[in-house]
Image 1: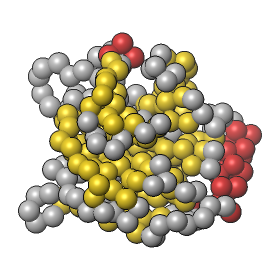
Image 2: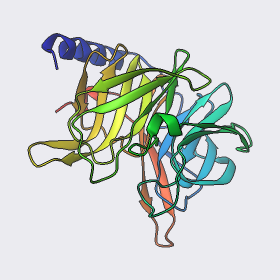
Image 3: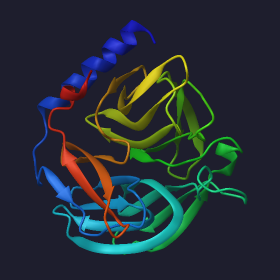
Image 4: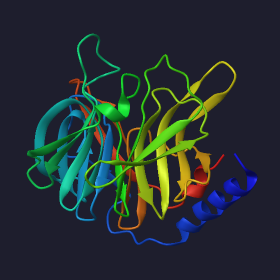
Length: 266
């Protein structure tokens, strides 16, 4: 990575922490549990949507439940745009054996969580990749190419789409190897946050957390923000989300505000 690109990215990253007004609690607990762990979150400033792999939940900003829906396994990260919820759905390509696992974006009504339509991304992924995260900004959708646990690549690729999911561009980022690739995506303060599990390829180790990339994809920096299960911007405040399994086997999710993301830069 060029030093100039890294410095430019860092300047942009540092600039985002001075603004933002808090409109909800520092910690938000989802009022509904899921059958599997959390895959992603997003908000339009009035509601929060939570993806639990096979269940979608809509809450208000306090975590009170407004709607739930059982959905296709494996539903991953999601984003909200124009009152609709877009969910990256890989059908368990890397977590189930045998069978055919289509790659697609499923679109649900934001209020009722009823399925409205689907976009196939099989041609984008081929047989090697999967789509498990998504975000939207400035007239474009962004998804990354996910990998199975045995495939080692030292870059991660963000694919940019039009609103009708025609591919526009691919942005290759020198992140180092991350198990399964990237997990969550979200725009905040003009920068893209890339949640990941981290990984070790025998020569180098990437610590789990979140990369922060500038809007021009000119470079990215690693942070220790715990964003592998969820990251979102709520009324100008950055939140990360995670889940924990309960005694009854269900998963409880919590979102926590990160008013100063710079604290998580190693």
